[in-house]
Image (tube, rainbow, N blue to C red; front, side, top):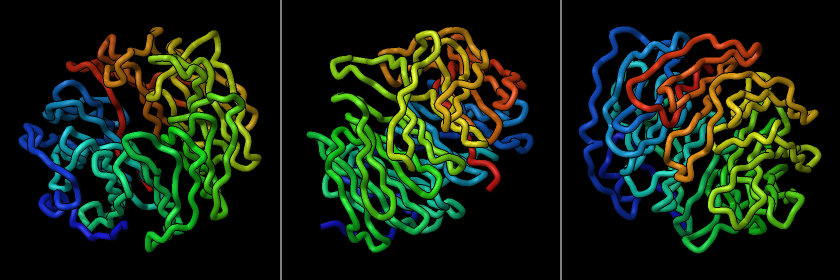
Length: 387
C-alpha cells in the first residue's frame, strides 16, 4: 500500500529514508566560481566534467560548474534554478549565481523532471518515489508518493491537483494511473505497453506514449488513441498550452537496436487521432530534437541540420531554418548529438562537432548569437523564464 510522506528538500537524511539506497560521489564536492555579473535568463549546457552557464541573450559564457559523471539538466520551474540529474540523485543548481544549492534528493537512477501547473515533479526510477515540489519555493517540504514497484517512469501533477503516474516494474510498463490530491485512485489504464514520456496540451489534456499509440487522460478518464500500426511507438512528447495537439516521436521498427525515425506524430487530443508526418528529405531526429514555440508551433531539429517549424493543426512544415551541419544520431543515447532547448521565441541548438551553441529566432530563423565552448556540449536546458 502506498504511503504519503512529507520530506524537507534540504534534509538529505530525510530524503534518503524514502529511497532504497543512496550513495556519495565526487559530485558532493561540486564547486563553482561566483558569477561576475547576473545572467540574463540562464542557459545550462552539460559537458564531460560539468555544466556551462550561458547568458540567454548573448550566449556569453558566464560560469562553469564542475560536476563529475553523466549529468542531465531540466528546467526547475522557476526563473532561477536548473534541475540536475546526477548519478546519485537530483540536485538543484542556482543558474544565476553558478552555485549548487543544498536542495537535493538522493537515490538511485534519477529519471524524469516535469514542471507543470506550478509544480516540479521528480521521478526516481530506482525507488519509484515521486517527489512533488512547489516550483516557486523549491526548498519547501516536498510531498511524496511511492509507486507499488520501481520502474522507469514519469509523474505529472495537473492544475486540479491530480497526480498522473506510470505503472510498471523491471519486467514491463503496462500503463498509467490517475490519483486525486489524497493519492486515491481515480482511473487507471493498462492498455499502454511500454508507457514512456508525457506531455500536456491545451485544456489540461495529458498524453503518454505507448508502443502502439498514445494514452490520453481527459475529463477524468483514459482514452486510447491507436498509432495506426501494430507497432507504432511514441515515447518522447512536447506539449503546449497554446495547442490541442502534442508532438511525439514515432518509431515503427520493433527489432531495431536504435531506430532513426523519419517521421513524427501529431496527437490531436480533441479529435483523439494521430497524424503521422514524414520528415523532409528523409531526415531523422533524436529524442533531444523536439520542442514547442511561443505560439504552440512544433519544432524539430533534424539530422539535415535544420530547425523545422510545424503547424500542428494542419500538420504541415512551414519553415526549415538551416542551423548546423548534417549529423547522425549516435547509438549510445548518452553520447552528444545536436540538441534543442526552446524558451518563448528563442531556440537554442548545440553542435558537438564544433563545440558550439546557437540561439535562433523561431519567428524568422535568424541566428542571433553563437558561442564556442571548451567542453563538448551534450544536453542543454535552462531556467523556465518569466512566469
